[in-house]
Length: 303
Image (tube, rainbow, N blue to C red; front, top):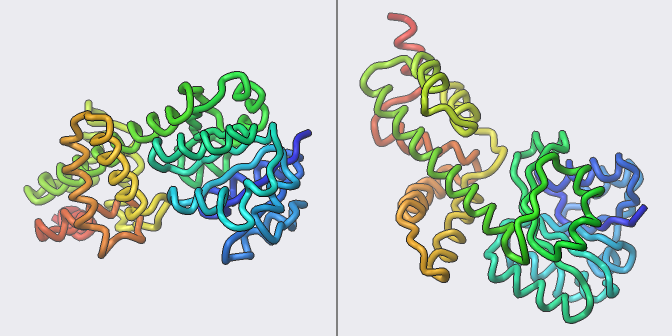
C-alpha cells in the first residue's frame, strides 16, 4: 500500500485525512501553525512531519488542501517545501480551489522533475468529507489518474476525470458559479415573498416541490429559517472563488455577466458576514428589505 502525505488539515482536510488513515494508509502529515489537527490524526497512526519537505521525503502520493494559490506555491516550492523532498514518480494531488492557470504553472514546474501534479478540487462540504462521499473533479495525466482510483475512492463517491491539467478546476468553477448564483437568487426570491407576507415554511413547501427545487435550496432554506449560519463553506471563501471565476473569464475571453454581479453581492456581504456560511448572503437581503425570515415565520404562524 502506497504511503500518503497530507497537508491542509482544515475543515475539509482533517476528515479526509482521517478517512485515509482509517482505510489503512500510512499517513505523513504536515502543518503550518496549528499542530492540534495533526495530533488528532497522529492518534490514529499518522506520522507528524516537522517540514513539508519531510512529508515529500516519506510519501509517494501527497494531498494538499489549502485556501489559495499563494499557499499552494509556498507548500510545494517554498523553503523546506515538498519539492525539496519529492522524488521522480511521486504524485501531488492539489484539492484546493485556485486559478487554473496557476495550477497548470505548478504542474509544469513539477513535471520538469518527473513529478506528476493533479488538480482535484472537491465538493460536498464537511459532511461529505467525513462520510467519504465527496465529488472530486480531476485534471492531469489520464494513465496515472487510473492508478489513483483506489485511494480516491476512500475520499469520494463521484470521481470524474475531466481531462488534462486545469480542467478539474474548470469544472469546480462552473459548479461554484452555479451554486453561488443560486444562493443569491434564492435569498432574493425568499426576501420578496416574505416581504409580501408569506410564511417562509409555507414558501419552502412550495419551492421544494416546484421547478425551483435544487440541492442548494434544500441546503440553505432551513438555514435561513433557523437563522443558523454555522459555516460549512465560508462566505469569504465563496467570494474568493468568484474572484477567481471572473478573472479566469477575462483571461479566456468569456462573458461573466452573472458571475460579476454575484461577485459584487458577495463582496458587499464579506466584511460583516465573511466568517459565516456562504448562505449568510440572505442576511444582506433581509437587512435591505427590513425583514427577518425567522421573525416573519414566528409572526405569521401566530396569525
